[in-house]
Image (cartoon, rainbow, N blue to C red):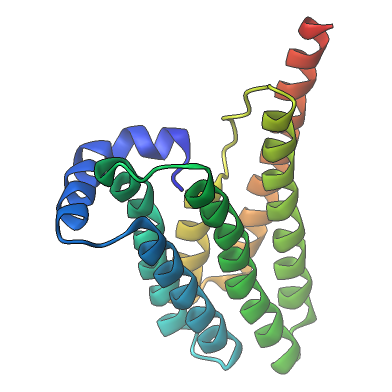
Length: 194
Protein backbone atom coordinates (compact mmCIF):
# COMPACT_ATOMS: atom_id res chain seq x y z
CA UNK A 1 0.00 0.00 0.00
CA UNK A 2 1.25 3.48 -0.82
CA UNK A 3 1.80 6.05 1.87
CA UNK A 4 -0.65 8.94 1.86
CA UNK A 5 1.82 11.42 0.36
CA UNK A 6 3.00 8.94 -2.29
CA UNK A 7 -0.60 8.05 -3.14
CA UNK A 8 -1.47 11.69 -3.79
CA UNK A 9 1.62 12.19 -5.94
CA UNK A 10 1.01 9.26 -8.28
CA UNK A 11 -2.76 8.75 -8.20
CA UNK A 12 -3.21 10.27 -11.67
CA UNK A 13 -1.09 7.40 -13.05
CA UNK A 14 -1.89 4.57 -10.64
CA UNK A 15 -5.69 4.88 -10.74
CA UNK A 16 -6.05 4.49 -14.55
CA UNK A 17 -3.58 1.58 -14.57
CA UNK A 18 -5.51 -0.03 -11.72
CA UNK A 19 -8.75 0.35 -13.67
CA UNK A 20 -7.16 -1.25 -16.75
CA UNK A 21 -5.80 -4.18 -14.73
CA UNK A 22 -9.18 -4.70 -13.03
CA UNK A 23 -10.91 -4.76 -16.43
CA UNK A 24 -8.35 -7.34 -17.58
CA UNK A 25 -9.33 -9.58 -14.65
CA UNK A 26 -6.22 -9.05 -12.52
CA UNK A 27 -7.08 -9.16 -8.82
CA UNK A 28 -5.57 -7.07 -6.04
CA UNK A 29 -4.59 -10.21 -4.12
CA UNK A 30 -2.74 -11.54 -7.17
CA UNK A 31 -0.70 -8.34 -7.30
CA UNK A 32 -0.02 -8.52 -3.56
CA UNK A 33 1.32 -12.07 -3.83
CA UNK A 34 3.31 -11.20 -6.96
CA UNK A 35 5.01 -8.39 -5.06
CA UNK A 36 5.90 -10.78 -2.24
CA UNK A 37 7.37 -13.30 -4.70
CA UNK A 38 9.48 -10.55 -6.23
CA UNK A 39 10.72 -9.41 -2.82
CA UNK A 40 11.64 -12.94 -1.76
CA UNK A 41 13.53 -13.45 -5.02
CA UNK A 42 15.27 -10.09 -4.52
CA UNK A 43 16.31 -11.12 -1.01
CA UNK A 44 17.79 -14.37 -2.31
CA UNK A 45 19.64 -12.53 -5.07
CA UNK A 46 21.03 -9.95 -2.65
CA UNK A 47 22.04 -12.61 -0.13
CA UNK A 48 23.89 -14.54 -2.80
CA UNK A 49 25.86 -11.46 -3.87
CA UNK A 50 23.84 -10.28 -6.87
CA UNK A 51 23.11 -6.90 -5.32
CA UNK A 52 22.47 -4.86 -8.47
CA UNK A 53 19.95 -7.38 -9.85
CA UNK A 54 18.44 -7.73 -6.38
CA UNK A 55 18.12 -3.95 -6.12
CA UNK A 56 16.41 -3.71 -9.49
CA UNK A 57 14.02 -6.50 -8.52
CA UNK A 58 13.32 -4.78 -5.18
CA UNK A 59 12.19 -1.71 -7.08
CA UNK A 60 10.14 -3.79 -9.54
CA UNK A 61 8.52 -5.76 -6.71
CA UNK A 62 7.24 -2.47 -5.33
CA UNK A 63 5.14 -1.88 -8.46
CA UNK A 64 2.47 -4.54 -7.80
CA UNK A 65 2.23 -3.24 -4.23
CA UNK A 66 1.69 0.25 -5.61
CA UNK A 67 -1.17 -0.99 -7.81
CA UNK A 68 -3.04 -3.49 -5.63
CA UNK A 69 -5.10 -0.85 -3.82
CA UNK A 70 -6.07 0.85 -7.09
CA UNK A 71 -7.14 -2.52 -8.55
CA UNK A 72 -9.18 -3.33 -5.44
CA UNK A 73 -10.94 0.03 -5.63
CA UNK A 74 -11.54 -0.20 -9.39
CA UNK A 75 -12.96 -3.73 -9.15
CA UNK A 76 -15.10 -2.98 -6.10
CA UNK A 77 -13.30 -5.68 -4.13
CA UNK A 78 -11.66 -3.44 -1.51
CA UNK A 79 -12.28 -4.87 1.93
CA UNK A 80 -10.84 -5.87 5.27
CA UNK A 81 -9.44 -9.21 4.07
CA UNK A 82 -7.46 -7.65 1.24
CA UNK A 83 -6.22 -4.81 3.44
CA UNK A 84 -5.12 -7.33 6.07
CA UNK A 85 -3.34 -9.50 3.49
CA UNK A 86 -1.64 -6.44 2.02
CA UNK A 87 -0.35 -5.30 5.42
CA UNK A 88 1.01 -8.73 6.32
CA UNK A 89 2.63 -9.18 2.92
CA UNK A 90 4.20 -5.71 3.14
CA UNK A 91 5.98 -6.74 6.36
CA UNK A 92 7.09 -10.05 4.84
CA UNK A 93 8.35 -8.30 1.71
CA UNK A 94 10.35 -5.78 3.73
CA UNK A 95 11.86 -8.54 5.84
CA UNK A 96 12.72 -10.70 2.82
CA UNK A 97 14.91 -8.10 1.16
CA UNK A 98 16.49 -6.89 4.40
CA UNK A 99 17.24 -10.45 5.52
CA UNK A 100 18.97 -10.90 2.17
CA UNK A 101 21.15 -7.92 3.10
CA UNK A 102 21.85 -9.46 6.54
CA UNK A 103 22.81 -12.70 4.78
CA UNK A 104 25.09 -10.78 2.41
CA UNK A 105 26.80 -8.99 5.29
CA UNK A 106 27.36 -12.24 7.17
CA UNK A 107 28.55 -14.14 4.10
CA UNK A 108 31.02 -11.46 3.03
CA UNK A 109 32.38 -10.70 6.52
CA UNK A 110 30.77 -7.26 6.66
CA UNK A 111 29.23 -7.24 10.13
CA UNK A 112 28.34 -3.53 9.92
CA UNK A 113 26.14 -4.21 6.86
CA UNK A 114 24.41 -7.09 8.69
CA UNK A 115 23.83 -5.02 11.83
CA UNK A 116 22.54 -1.99 9.90
CA UNK A 117 20.14 -4.17 7.90
CA UNK A 118 18.93 -5.80 11.11
CA UNK A 119 18.38 -2.37 12.64
CA UNK A 120 16.43 -1.16 9.59
CA UNK A 121 14.29 -4.31 9.80
CA UNK A 122 13.51 -3.71 13.47
CA UNK A 123 12.77 -0.01 12.98
CA UNK A 124 10.55 -0.76 9.96
CA UNK A 125 8.50 -3.17 12.04
CA UNK A 126 8.18 -0.55 14.81
CA UNK A 127 7.02 2.07 12.27
CA UNK A 128 4.30 -0.31 11.10
CA UNK A 129 3.35 -1.39 14.62
CA UNK A 130 2.97 2.20 15.85
CA UNK A 131 0.60 2.99 12.98
CA UNK A 132 -1.42 -0.21 13.43
CA UNK A 133 -1.73 0.31 17.19
CA UNK A 134 -2.66 3.97 16.74
CA UNK A 135 -5.37 3.08 14.24
CA UNK A 136 -6.71 0.36 16.54
CA UNK A 137 -7.14 3.06 19.22
CA UNK A 138 -8.88 5.40 16.77
CA UNK A 139 -5.97 7.77 16.13
CA UNK A 140 -4.60 8.97 12.80
CA UNK A 141 -0.95 8.20 12.07
CA UNK A 142 -0.25 9.22 8.47
CA UNK A 143 3.14 10.83 9.12
CA UNK A 144 6.77 9.95 8.57
CA UNK A 145 9.68 10.88 6.34
CA UNK A 146 10.52 7.22 5.67
CA UNK A 147 7.29 5.35 5.09
CA UNK A 148 7.35 2.09 3.14
CA UNK A 149 7.54 3.55 -0.40
CA UNK A 150 10.50 5.72 0.54
CA UNK A 151 12.26 2.80 2.21
CA UNK A 152 11.79 0.59 -0.87
CA UNK A 153 13.18 3.26 -3.19
CA UNK A 154 16.21 3.99 -1.00
CA UNK A 155 17.05 0.31 -0.43
CA UNK A 156 16.50 -0.69 -4.05
CA UNK A 157 18.56 2.23 -5.36
CA UNK A 158 21.35 1.64 -2.81
CA UNK A 159 21.60 -1.99 -3.91
CA UNK A 160 21.33 -1.17 -7.60
CA UNK A 161 24.02 1.53 -7.57
CA UNK A 162 26.45 -0.10 -5.13
CA UNK A 163 25.79 2.33 -2.29
CA UNK A 164 24.56 -0.20 0.23
CA UNK A 165 26.17 1.07 3.42
CA UNK A 166 25.29 4.75 2.88
CA UNK A 167 21.78 3.68 1.91
CA UNK A 168 21.42 1.64 5.09
CA UNK A 169 22.64 4.55 7.23
CA UNK A 170 20.08 6.78 5.51
CA UNK A 171 17.37 4.20 6.19
CA UNK A 172 18.35 3.86 9.86
CA UNK A 173 18.18 7.63 10.33
CA UNK A 174 14.98 8.15 8.33
CA UNK A 175 13.16 5.21 9.86
CA UNK A 176 14.17 6.23 13.40
CA UNK A 177 12.87 9.74 12.74
CA UNK A 178 9.63 8.24 11.41
CA UNK A 179 9.19 6.22 14.61
CA UNK A 180 9.61 9.40 16.66
CA UNK A 181 7.25 11.37 14.39
CA UNK A 182 4.55 8.74 14.73
CA UNK A 183 4.90 8.33 18.49
CA UNK A 184 4.76 12.12 19.01
CA UNK A 185 1.74 12.44 16.70
CA UNK A 186 -0.21 9.75 18.52
CA UNK A 187 0.88 11.02 21.93
CA UNK A 188 -0.49 14.47 21.12
CA UNK A 189 -3.79 13.05 19.88
CA UNK A 190 -4.10 10.87 22.99
CA UNK A 191 -3.47 13.86 25.28
CA UNK A 192 -6.24 15.86 23.57
CA UNK A 193 -8.61 12.87 23.72
CA UNK A 194 -8.30 12.53 27.51
